[in-house]
Amino acid sequence: MASTSSKSSRELELEQKIRILEDEINKEKLKTATLSTLIDIAERDLKIDIKKGGAKQ
Image (cartoon, rainbow, N blue to C red):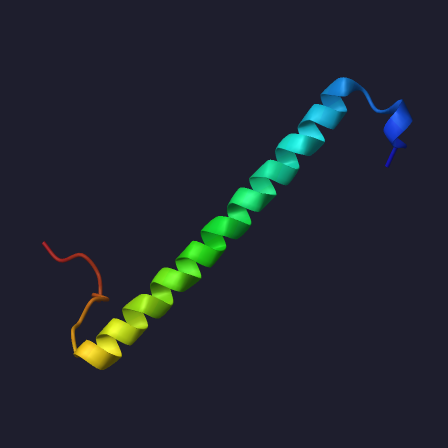
């Protein structure tokens, strides 16, 4: 990888965009894990079936 002083502004812009997108991915992974845990607890404690076997028509 090139040193910071030799990178173009476009390269720096793209690297910043990558960092932002990686942060967003990590937030969504955490959100997904949280919601999955919430569903598991609700199914276990409230005895309700939230997860379905698939869409049936």
